[in-house]
Length: 195
Image (tube, rainbow, N blue to C red; front, side, top):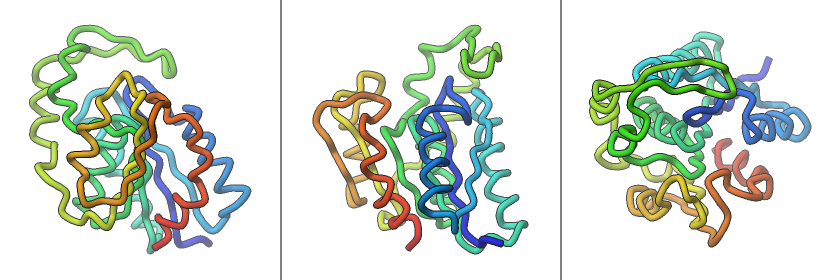
């Protein structure tokens, strides 16, 4: 039985079947089988999403995992930050959302997740939930590695660079919100999360 696990937290309007989630899973199975790999389905509503991510961490603890680490992409990077600080975990963040409570208004009303087929409604109460969850600062910068690309048209990478100041950072020019070429970093990601 492996005692280490990596939990991947996908982004908003995404799913456990996203390209990066599958990429990480394929890599771990082929190159780092000492890790179990868990990708919980995160609902779009913030409170439910964080609860699902928290449940994944707690289930791994109950299963006897002594090493739990996180990878979070976009909105999943926000949840990974919250959980990493709450539980003292290591986390790799890929183009993370830093202040989602200031952006969620774009999605007020009815929405549709094309990956899951789920329809859902977001409103001001969800913005309030995110504002209450949002960390004010990074407590243990050695636990975080930020990966951002300046060509991200969904989120302003400079917000993440500023918020995660003092953390390990990789800032690439160009690229996009998906973080083009993420596979180049998988060896380093596993090494970082193994410490």
